[in-house]
Length: 416
Image (tube, rainbow, N blue to C red; front, top):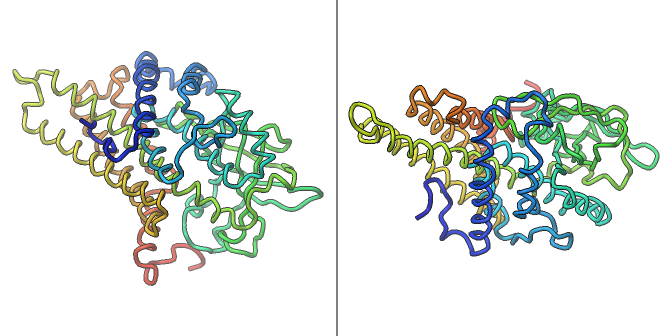
């Protein structure tokens, strides 16, 4: 029998089921025991000290870091016709153990796919072996900026929404100047994909380029680790580029970087919803166990009608999220025209419904729900972060309406 909130096993092929089983063992034997033993560790204010090396080393041993890397480098081959669904299954399972660790790994998967599709072969030859040789090697995608972060996610080609980070041609390459904010893995990544405006006269979609920038490039400075409310085992960072120079061959996409990043953005929405779902599944599992063990009023509390109704509602929400997630992932993998709309829908729906599931979990645990050592409050904190990751719920809703009613929906960007 499938777990509540789980994409049904009958929807997966044998390879996907085997990968999920491998991931489940990693979560149950490594991640969840670590989190349970170290409830206070994620609150260390020395970012490098939070996650011990063995957590990523065990992920490496299970092959979980290799997703998205071409098999010629030793990566895990994923069928391109089911890649988004595979990523969803694995991301949800890891987030059932810890959302931050799932964030940490999924960023690597997404950037690996982007490099696989856009980077010239000699750069793939250089970086994929280095990535696979070091279990602690992280990658980051530098899109969001301090000003107008939501502009990046609007599907409107307004020059006013152009990035403030700029790149200009110089001898034998490019000079990048600007600042990036709220970057997943940004604090401790070794390799960055950076987006910058290369034509201020063009709209955002026609004047943005992307570059591959190693961490040790002069002019790149990691300035801050953002202390987030949830997902704290992924170190979110801020980065400044000041006369940062990269060779010409480190240009990944010229002027149409946001369009070409569709190979990253759509699966990225799937991953966000999947990680969110994994948090909800963990919250439900812990709550279902608690209400069948805790006695109140002379009976186990699941026998109280108010508790039973809440538990049923939690399960129904998770099943609905899983169903929409499966449909959206299949649409992406089969390149259906409605794929972008469904990705935004599942991102919004998962972020809202899973947060409500975690609220119910907290309430059903009573006073224990607020206790750090019980761990239920962590689900609520982790889920709250997803309202604003990969676009806010409002901006994602604007995109949904634009896809449904392109002739009459508002522009939401540009001069009044």
